[in-house]
Length: 214
Picture 1 (cartoon, rainbow, N blue to C red):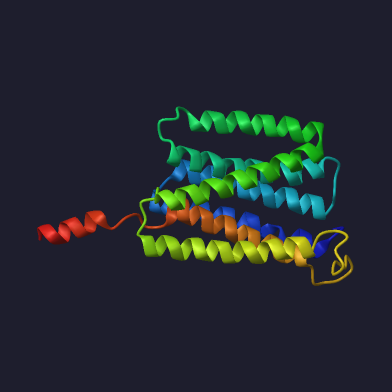
Picture 2: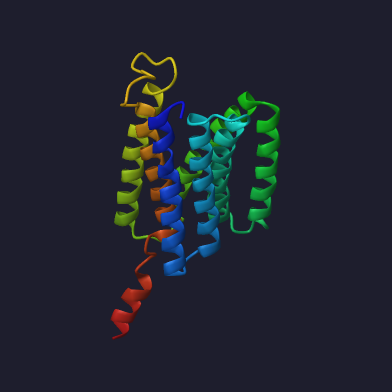
């Protein structure tokens, strides 16, 4: 492995992806969407292991592309929630994924730029969802989850910036790699987003109605 610590830590995405799938299947809640998301996370992990480990030809694409597709999945879920009248959002997600694949094959720089745009779009959509209270989740619970995601995202951003190649604190020969920490934290952040979008208990309105009737 060219970068053993970074390669092994990439397996965090695989672990989180499998946890997402297992929880969804057991709870029978949003199984199809969760399986797709879990597979996307696992693909990030496998691609990252190849990129930081044996580094075969094409490992750059295998590293970058699953990240973009996963963020596009987040965008598709958010768009479907905000504008339910939009027809066939998953067809759009599939078409966007095909376009993303072609873009990464043509140019890694263009693919990275597209990922940046997708991330900004996803963040903007999440802000809009929170402001509109579009998710049928009790306000306090939603605020707590968003607060946790923001805190994790801030730490993740710091480890990504400090762990980048060329950073003053980046030491490729060290057993302590900030980029490895980025892998662990960002994988957790994706898991928290899934829990917010699909896993967390929905509104307690129905329960309250039963209590009132009783």
